[in-house]
Image (tube, rainbow, N blue to C red; front, top):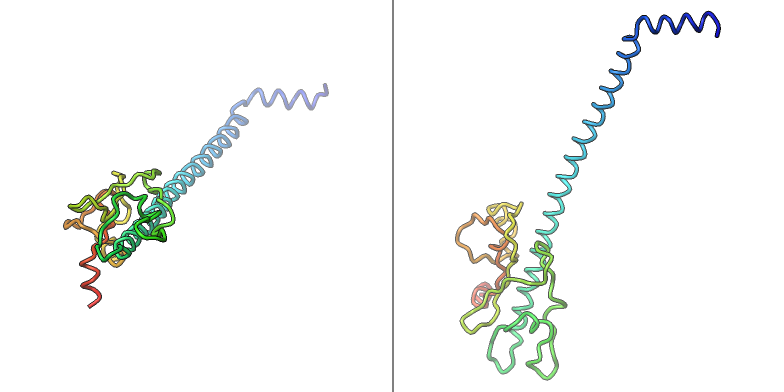
Length: 184
């Protein structure tokens, strides 16, 4: 070992905090960068979650409207002029009331809020299905006042209170009298 190398080691041993301070600042810098990355990822994940929920809400609106149209078609295609509603959702898939079976809907859609093919059914006095609703008790992102303004033409709501706080309160109902009145 040379004299110069020995002197450098000796100086480092005399002042050990000089090197330690540099390592401490580097450690704090790395912690700060990790903190910034974690905050950014939390914000991105929460905005992704909200966006995904909005997409499911729009899908629920589309599916509910499809059920309304299918119930309307079933009702209007009744044979012998006797208008009636389907007894079960499967009747919309294959309507055997006529010589040529009719399909009023392509499939029984899965509820995007519950990931289930089970729907809440709205029935009339003769046990016919007039509408459907989601069984989800979750809270919608779309607030009810915004919802009624934006989707009033696509959505039939039986509730009188505009403060809809659950998806299960979004009712998709075919009302034959209401549609006939709009035609005049």
